[in-house]
Image (cartoon, rainbow, N blue to C red):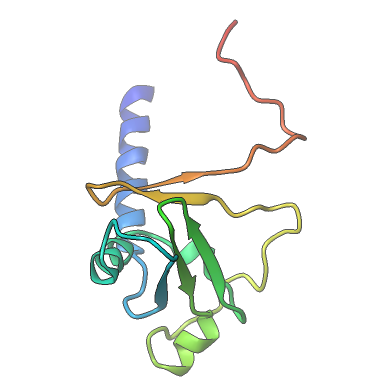
Length: 130
């Protein structure tokens, strides 16, 4: 029974994430010098399908770095509200906690996005061994 409950919760969480895709036209893409992997239009299409709203801040823009050689600049929630793209901005954070470090993202050739979070020295990580 616990296994079925876990599967149902994972399915529900997956559906929630898919429903909260990045707001179209809510960011800009900047390619670093020498970048030649994807076009800006391809990157924009991939980012629109992903869920980056939890990285968007209330009053300031936020830059997400991609190891591939480009950055995504998320416009602030206030900017999106003023342009009519978002109605309710109460769920957005004004800032991240001081100890929080943004991950470095990677876009694969198939359009999947991964994130590498910096290791926190204050957290003990399990080795998975007993």
